[in-house]
Image 1 (tube, helix red, strand yellow):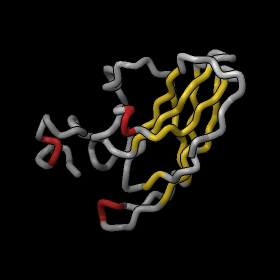
Image 2: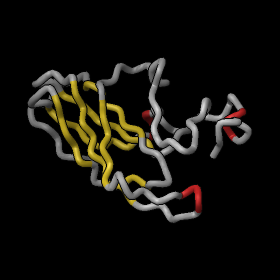
Image 3: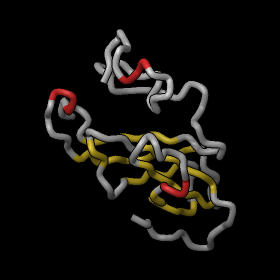
Length: 143
């Protein structure tokens, strides 16, 4: 953790989370894009519970959060894959990703409730990519 003085882990530009997010706020954004050469589709993530997350930095135990991913900008009739990573170091390394769901888009948006919880003391990165091959029938959820 760090504060506005950036005297902790955030002072090191080689830290994977550099530049850091102020510890009193739990949100961030990608300004210049993701470290992924593949073109992904817009995603949003909603977690439950979102109002009662424990203060893990103060020693409270993490709790599992239920995540719901919404992919948008889909082309109906095209196939897509949603990937997930659970660490900063492995994010966007597809050899270390979990394939969460492959599907045939029926609309411009797909909502998926991930069956694997997200630890409130950890991270989860998701990415949706269009598949290069069309599928006749949508496959089942992998996880």
